[in-house]
Each structure stands twice: as C-alpha cells, then as structure tokens.
Amino acid sequence: MKFWTSTQKNDDKIIAFVNDTIYKANPRIDDIDKYILDLKTKNISYPAFLGIPLRYISQINQQENKKYIEVIFRGDTEHLRIENDKQRSEVFEFFKENIPGANYYIIKQSKIQAIKAPLIAIVIIVIIFLWSLIIAIGIESGNEYDVTGERYHSIAGIVLIFASLGVVKLIAIFGSLLSIACFSLYRKYKNPVIKNSLIINR
Image (tube, rainbow, N blue to C red; front, side, top):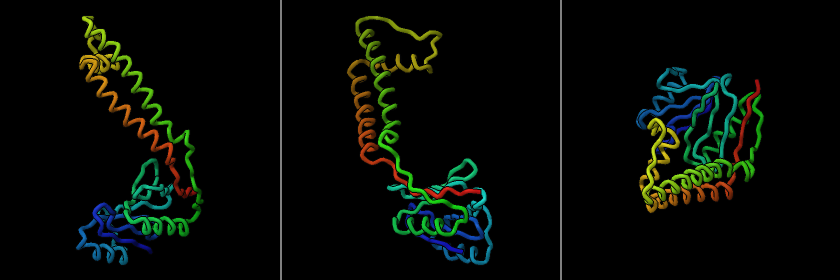
C-alpha cells in the first residue's frame, strides 16, 4: 500500500494505491487521518473513495505544465490533481515501477500536430467573419436578407445575426476572436505537448 496526502486547495486530498486499485478521496482536512486509517484497515467504501482497479486502466499520463495525472479507463478519464511538481512526479514514478504490464513512453507532439486545432479555429473564424462582413456591408447599403425558413439556429442564421451587429462591431468582435486564436496557435507552436505515458497491456 502507498498513499499521498495534501492540504492544498486544488489538490485531491488523498491519493492511494491499494490492492491493485488507484484510489482518490477528498475529505475535510480534519478527516484525512481518519480516511488514511480506513485505507490501512481496508475499510474502503464508496462514495468516500473513488477506486479504479488496474484491470480497467489502459493508460496513465503525466503531461508537462498540467497539474494532474490523467488516468484513462474504460473509455473514461479521471484526473489525480497534484499541484506540487515533485509529488506529482513521485506518484507517476511509483505507478511506473509498480504497475504490472505498464510500458513507459515519452510522447512528443510535433509542431504541426500542436497547431492543428488553433489553425482550424482561425480558418473557421475567418470564413464566418468574411461571410458576415459581406452581408453587414450589404445591410448598411440598404439590402435585405433573410434565412430560408427562418431557421436562425443554422450557420446562415448565425452569420445573419453577426452581420446585423454592423461592420464596426463585427470587426471588433472577430478581431478579438482572431487575436485569441492566433495567440493560442503561437503558444502551442512554441510549446508542443510532451507527456510521460504508461500504456498498460493486458
């Protein structure tokens, strides 16, 4: 059995490895010792503890700049929240050394992979902006527009709503969105994801 405790606000208060199961619990700080005693005496009951048996786990990841360890199991994901870098690395290393059948990999994202999502966002923003801008200019020139069947929840309807705000507001809104997307692209390009990963074979 191995356990880690924390009193930090954003941390899971207890993380434990007992009988081939990863547990986490978030009692009041005053109750941490009681919960640890429950672990030692195997008095582990739900919902006091969330337990994930190793037989369900397919992958465990520790990504740089993330304050948690990601546990992937049965198509779901759970985060073990640990703010302290040293303790987070200690927990991951323990899993690495003590989980049978776990193969360790360092996964490095390429710069192209890193910018894919923000690049798609930029393309979508530009397309909607240009479409809305053309209609906005037309509206200000006296043209009238409507959506077929008045389905304003469609993409055309959304574009018409944006266009109705006017050219100036449209430029301000999409300028801000484009700035955010470009900053995200730059940040992801400069800092592609690097993560330590345990792939658990059955």
